[in-house]
Length: 119
Image (cartoon, rainbow, N blue to C red; front, side, top):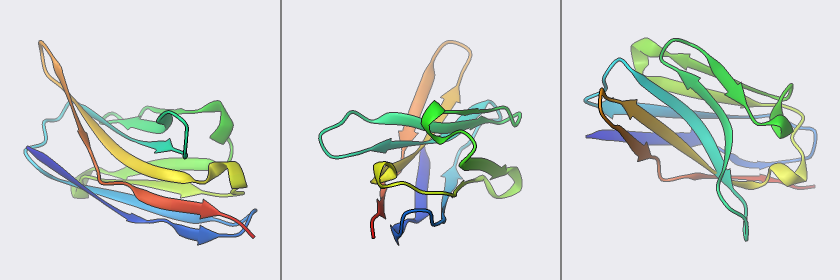
């Protein structure tokens, strides 16, 4: 089992910055991908950014150049630095870990943290 605990989030004005962190604990195999997804009211959950255990990253087009994902492998923690925030970035942000086994994959989710961009 894997537990994910998110922190950060809150209220920020447009153009501002915010940081999220997600700490994983439990039995964590070496092959995994961690990342952030978000869900705005009335919309489907969508990918924001992911980072592999090898450090490869991927971003949604809407956040490229504004958001940066990093990880501290020693702490099993992933971070999301969000700059130049826009009102459309308002959503509940969820941390996710995908564990890749030989024959299957398993997803774990955090509880979510609210990010609100508003003046």
